[in-house]
Image (cartoon, rainbow, N blue to C red; front, side):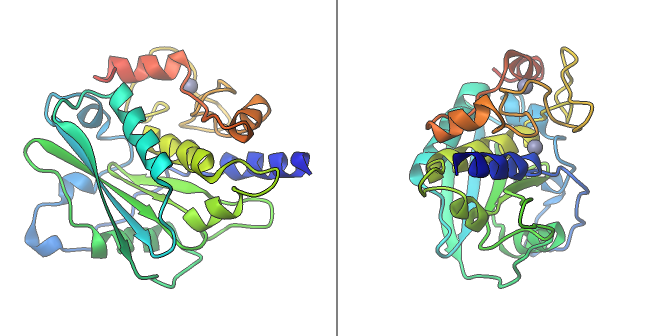
Length: 257
Ligand SMILES: [Zn+2]
Ligand SMILES: [Zn+2]
């Protein structure tokens, strides 16, 4: 039983992220300049990591009713960001819910459209804003053996397929929901931080040749299948995979800590 779950999770996280094409700008925001938040994934690596331009970071966390992430996972993300970036002005989270868009399974373009319709926080002179959406339902393309848990699709935007995360956690022989949420949230956030070879220049060769923009260290948070082998044991045992020293070095070299 445990093996089945492990295999499933292995496959899950294997495709948990696709830093794929950047959806176009679909929207307005009342005429504010939002173009700085509509850039390719990884392009705000230095702005997120350092305090050169932005001393503060705010996460606009929007979830579909019934799909709120655990407070523990949100706290873990804030702690994780604080440990890797310089934001002397602070890291804050503004959470709220929206009704279901009713579009599951979601394409990345639909996720981007939901952002355009609901996002209210964009960069200001000293605060960089990140949009985190927790969807009800699954990603288009999910199968019985392959599911997407999250996608970092723009420089300051990522989605977590919370309904899928919940379906794979919290039960017998499954990792706790807060641990799986933490792993996926931190993995996707690290893509917008520029990992791996996605905006934060590599200080050593550690990109997985078979899975671009991911680390080749099997125990690393940025391994394409962060939960394989020992990793799944870690998640099952209540620990979130950590970044390996090479990924940390990349972040430090691009303004992080
Ligand atoms: Zn990934
Ligand atoms: Zn790594």
